[in-house]
Length: 418
Ligand SMILES: Cc1ncc(COP(=O)(O)O)c(C=O)c1O
Image (cartoon, rainbow, N blue to C red; front, side):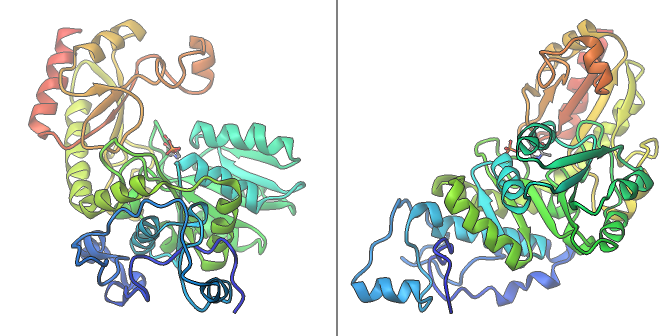
């Protein structure tokens, strides 16, 4: 068997036995077990109860014959840190188990995963179709970086399946979508996207499911070819690491392992260790995020100082029916419009006692942000409006504090600044 040079090293013990946690059989009932045990080897060496952090930049060989055996594919082992790491490998296996994927490649951030995939998979002359409200750095990468290499794109409004179907050209190689989008939490019916994709043999469907997480939605089960996560968010779950993953069929992801070895965007072992640790409690955390965010969304919707709430779990959300059909839970992000202008919204945010003000999401600490100030600071009100970002828009990433405490805090802040 010929080996690629960049094949990731095996986890601590080899061969890895994950048969108890057959990813293909993953369902929400088994998810708690999958999060704790999925993708892990039977033992880690040193009689350790958890996967150790293997901090090494290089791997040594006992003899020249060992080098020969490595390149002949007779043993699965490490060669150099840019090509893989045993701790990172276990994190990849865990993610594959959660997603029901054959393979996963981990990167140093969500953007490193997305950028590496797009650069590796596409070539000059190719075309990408993307829903217009995808993560703005992904859009930026497609619009500016890929354009430099002669790769064209079309943006289509979320939920307009005819426009999406019409946008697919003979040169189209990729459809990119998110589940759900941010900050308005639009929910695209991924099975419908997969139907469109199936009519075009050369097209792949990639879904960034960072906000849904595999607890609430596994796009591969709905016909997507690839699923991407910013593991920085719910999978890590503690606002203390940056990581990104891409999962899918073995041949596609093997190419990502190879590309990672060249582009260099590997995850470091410490972040890999933190990610494994975060995933162990992921299922428990997601239950709380889902329940708490729904209650907070309902509370905000009934509040006189709130103009509108965007949460797919509410019947008032334009994609509520798709979300109900597609998702196991509605996630931890609630967006809403405070009744008032930019200044009033600033006063409300500053009056909140529990949430920390900051970008990002998915951690145990509740985070609150006003997109007009944080993500779109440099734009004028008119430019923000053109992008659909209202000055009075607030995004809340509901953490694991008591729901009652959060409701009381939001209430006092809304009242104090009405
Ligand atoms: C939906 C989505 N995808 C990708 C990313 C990029 O991830 P990272 O910040 O880990 O590079 C983000 C970051 O906010 C995101 O929200």
